[in-house]
Amino acid sequence: MEGFYRDLLDAMQVDSEKAEPQYQPTYYWKICSERITEDLQRHGLENFRAMPAALKHFVPTYIFGDLAPFPEKRQAVAKALKDAAPDSPKTQLWLDELLTGRILAAADYRVFRASYRDRAPYFDRVSESEIGNPVGQSSIEARRFSRSMLNYLLGLNFLKEHVSDVPCRTVLEIGGGFGTLGEILLTDSRNDTFYINVDIPPTALFSTYYLRQLLGDDRVIDYLQTREQQVFEIDQFRADGMAAVLCAWQLPKLRGKVDLFANFISFQEIEPDVVQGYLQQVARLESKYVLLRNIREGRELARHVGDLGMQQATVAEDYDRFLPDYDLVATNVYPYGFATVDGFHSELRLYRHR
Image (cartoon, rainbow, N blue to C red; front, side, top):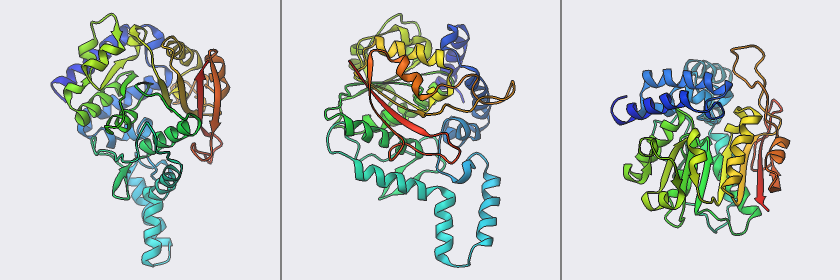
């Protein structure tokens, strides 16, 4: 990786070390960031959605048994199942659907199609790009979907079920992965949306790369452009592009108001006091709605120092305390969330500003 993106990552990492502690990677993400950065050097930015560390930590797939980061194990499981199964073309097709995860993708797609409401914001025509060389992307009705995209599409349908007139002129996300929510909202010309993703390095690098490749370099405001600024006016951002990627320590410098704030998955990987600090910033920006998808029971704790896990879990009820100026509108595991086999359920929560 050379040139602009090498300079971008270097600047982010240098400034991250100087940032206030609450805006630096927490225990879980210190470990993840090191693994992802090492993989980035080996595999290259153009393959970031196929890197083993990315597949393990921030690029979700439907691939059977969480085996996406382990191609050799996937092949061994596939061979064992196919050798044990009846020797018929239909059985082999079903096994392919199971092992690739397409059977789960199709189930989520059916829920998405059945629950879609034909009003703004629009995303009924969306088809995911192949930027980053994705693993586990499914083709359904001549369009492409990853687990990340279907997670967001279901969440947005949940939002539209409870809000008849969803405001989305300005959408803010913290920990937005590689920018899927921005892709959904910005690639449909019927939506008048400006998207802001706030993240830590190196994931902020991936969303910058993804959105620049998708929308064009001149339409995405990047960290090098804003690094020296003391204040960021949302209205000025809108005049200068379609999206902006900021780093976590820049969030307090953001000025203006937000229509919708979203966090999908990443708050479950951050300790409660840090989550509370982020949500205080969201409240300062007077976001009209807050849409969350995180583990209801909280992510598993790290058993030993150095293990991947949480030092303290953020659970569903924490968000009620962290958002004192908001009313809880609805929660959902079925059909928009995901009930897991291990009892850690992916739950959607929607809040409205009083």
